[in-house]
Length: 576
Image (cartoon, rainbow, N blue to C red; front, side, top):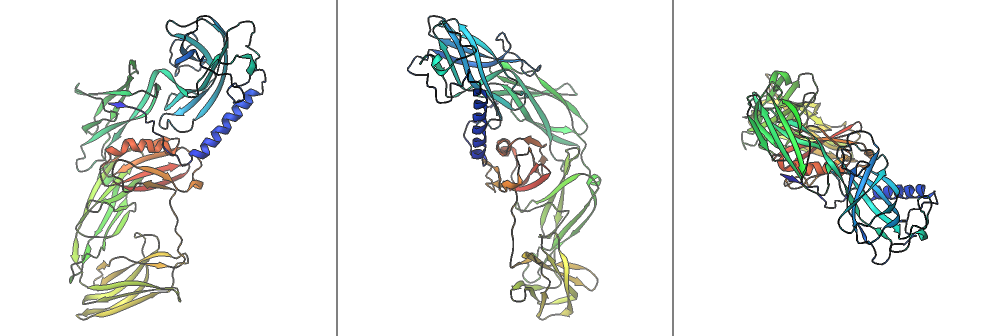
């Protein structure tokens, strides 16, 4: 399967600011070099020596090399570094005082159209060169240490200007001016030329799908985590080979393949070879050990399930169900989803206000090992012995109180009602009052309760009733809300859009720019079926590039994008 870097321009939220900073950086670089008045930068706009149509030298290619012009492995050793220029010309005689002025830009392969990661100014004197009108020739020049990491970066020769003289009467190696080089005796390329690398370097990681039902086997997917070398403008090809303990093997040309149904405790060797045309990288192999599944005992210490209640008259589900989990101590991340309600999501150990007849899925991830499991909870519904109707809450501005009213059509063994309130979501209700019931009654009874101690912060306040029988059994009513004055909303640092996504596009956008100081971003996808190992990138753009590649392989439903930067973590719910 071929993979090509996307060259489509994408607007970055910080693009303008970064562009300004980078422009200032280049200006400082130029003026720093230009302090040596003997060797000015002829590209600064004040010198216009490239005129007419006499640009009779053409740069065909640029590549990293050794001092002799041979392509070399720049990932080995620590310099010195060289680049070689493959060129041709229609000149019939030697030229002299040959000089090249350019910038070497270091760029992110995941963000090819973004601002450069770094820039290095070069101004190299070559001297006299022979004609090259019957083929192509090579010029090799030294370059500074450009901080090569051999990970996800690539390099470009930006705005190269080549100038020369037809006469050797003057030596311009140590001193020259704009007027030293005759007009039209130059090549001024306003664009950038990719610097090719004669090697391919890459890494990859396995991803273990969550265990669900069958704890004896799982699927193992693979993702390429870094890729360096070759030409950033050409296609890459991936070849995978998987060798198993029984000497059988599989192969794949997908960029992100999956090996199905591997037994826990088993191991196999995964080998990746990436090529680009005639350039073939060295095979990279790792031994993959399929981890043991997390058992119920590994994760859950205790659990409590309370069925939802049904109104006996209307058969309405009162959404009063509850599932409460006490987890074994450990470094776990867990979240809930619903098979019937794709919008349902919670990261709390206890979920309530649940409808009956639904299956709730608990996904638990061991952050130490990366393994995860899925547990399913089927919640039923039962007829409510006390029929509650007309539950309502009203905010009274004059007294800054909330009045909760309800009625019963009939009561059976009804001891009392407990009024519960939550100011921060449906998972943190507390008792605020109690109203005695009528015991046994077949006629309508109206009830009310006034909450006089409302939170000072205001906001959207939730209420529910806990109906308690004489024998201690209880059921919950549906949850109602009331909006209290002076509400203040706060937004997350990040948001996902479009959300829901149709599976073709998803981006994570920075909302609170003051909360992000250009730290490295580590993110992962957490789905009820699998968890992707954390991926660290240098920018929001790079994160969205990865998301674009991962999105098609994510099943429909609710999943979580976990974004971590500095000492902060945010979980963003996404619907697909």
